[in-house]
Amino acid sequence: MDALFDRHQPTLTAALKAAQERGYWSAYPEIPSGKIYGETAKDDGLASYNARLGKPFDMSGHPVTAQVGAEVSPFGPTLDITYPAADAGTLIAASQSAAPGWATASVKTRVGICLEILARLNRRSFEMANAVMHTTGQAFAMAFQAGGPHAQDRGLEAVAYAYAEMTRTPTQALWTKPQGKGEPIVLEKHWRIAPRGVSLVIGCQTFPTWNSYPGLFASLATGNTVIVKPHPGAILPLAITVAVIREVLVEEGFDANIALLAADAPGAEITGDLVKSDAVSIIDYTGSNSFGEWVRKHAGEAQVYTEEAGVNSIVIAATGDFVGMCANIAFSLSLYSGQMCTAPQNIYVAKTGIQTNEGHKSFDEVAAGIAAAIDDLLADPARAAGVCGAIANPATVQRVEAARSLGKIIRDSARIGSGDARTATPLILAVDGNETNAHAQELFGPIVFIVAVADATDGIAQATSLARRKGAITAGLYDTDDSRIHVAVDAFAAAGVNLSVNLTGSIYVNQSAAFSDFHVTGANPAGNASLTDAAFVANRFRTVMWRRPKAA
Image (cartoon, rainbow, N blue to C red; front, side):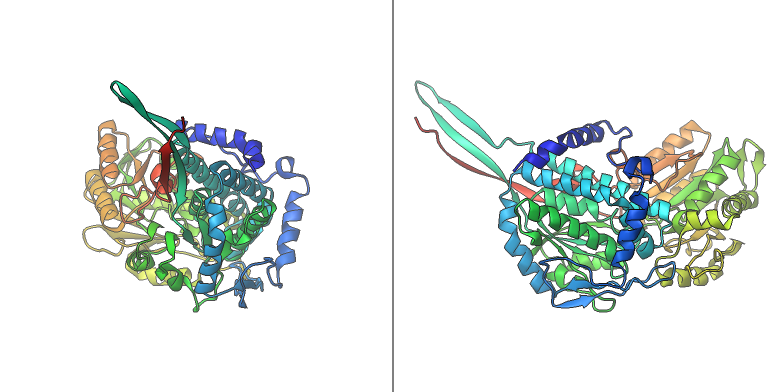
């Protein structure tokens, strides 16, 4: 039963080493190259995606009482795929029925199966890229990376952490207690992993695999059955994932219902019924603060892990590379049209301006420099489409329209091209940080505030105060004063925010690398968990002992 573990042990060993050392490492190549994935892989992946359109999604043996599906690509076409659906009670009953066999499987067996699943998902990265692209609006290159290898890396990271925590205690030991002149007491003791039970993973529309894989694989590896609840607008990527999981489970002699898909229709979601069920013991949730608060309130005794909304900030105090700074910020603001949970929203700049390698720059000149850098980046429509992608949800476009009245427009948002894709480039507004609170909440999408503050110290104080109150996942700082940089480091750490300093070139504040970067700290309202640390996996199971006197 441990053949899969033996096959993939080198990958697991390397993942454990990478997680300990925190340097760069990736198990799954992020370049969509035929030399890596096979010369026909791109065409084969597109063909597999196209073959799913307009048909019921085949998931043999899955509980089904109806067919649902209403996905529409942000690039225009309707997917017209239907998925097996069932009510919450039916799914939970099936999950509970499958649980005993999975709970009693060995750690090596479960981890080996998880590693095999990830390897198979990696081989289908081109199909997944098309599925992610046409449900989220990510451009193809980003959909391949974020929906495929990067998500798989995050899943592997969770499996590695789970393995480390589950094997921290031996499976058995001989316990000998001296009794003076008498015979010692000798007990044989045995320990086993006891999973919590049914796990619910609530996916989001913008990053259905990247955000779901950590909780999904952490729960599977630790012996919990999993019900995957995708966003109604992005079912396909998680349906493919669940289908692969079920395929491997059956091959290895397990009940396929260890992994279930909770597909539903917009306006008729079953999420609430699943969350409120006493049978659900673990919940992983990614989404808005308002629904996250509802989940925590109604989850009963379940262990809840959340990634929610936050207001990410950049403070510009000074820079030794004005052009490089503006270009770096421009890409961060434009990438996937600001729909990343790590994308900056607020940029704090002193009213009196900043010092740069080009001399003093006024507040207006800093704002104009960033706007001009966005214009340069997006000047070519093809490149603009590749960077910005499309808008996942029509409500985001409406939010951009409404935001125009919230400040002085430095750069207006515009559509990209003239096709059917739902697009919007960044809207940049200038506001005074002491005169308005328009920027003091998350406005999801390509909406940016350049906030005038008294000075850099005031900017750091406002950004960190907002993070403590509203949450933040990332922060950026540009400065040339080491003493002020260290003050900012301490301030953002106290606010529970990961800080990037003086980024230029091709690394950006909204990028997060598995095995090195902890995504979300769990230390402010942007989320109560971190992807991926020991705390994210260790409470998904308990260690239970049985003992007896050793036979003579």
